[in-house]
Length: 165
Ligand SMILES: [Zn+2]
Image (tube, rainbow, N blue to C red):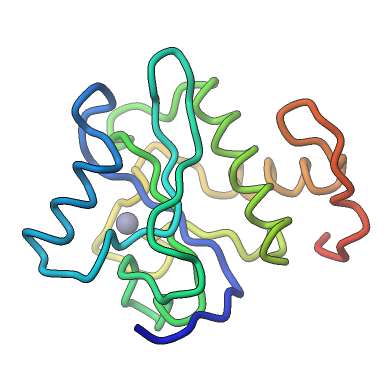
């Protein structure tokens, strides 16, 4: 696998039921056993675990992912998968807060500007991913707000000094 220079974040959904048994490990197994890939295609995943919602590691972010071949995005972006299905209903507010926190942290860690956060469908017209009901401008505005305020999960981090907004 080639080394990855991260310039964008691309958000996906797993298109699976949001609940027990739809874990990161189940997705990894499917990608490896069914697709024949070396590892799970996404670099990070956000899923419900018990009463909480957590950001979990997938494929190491030093390696190219397998999440968006369109536009060459596997070569310049991290794939972030939200476990769930959002064509019928938009993400619940508590999930959305965690997604925005997670994306702001990743933007912080990898030096990606809020304007460089995309949904998969913005590169592939035939897809609805991360979900028809997911407003991607609202998503970017939410990440931008966290970077500007320097607040992630209600905690202050020095995001304002990163020149990302
Ligand atoms: Zn996708």
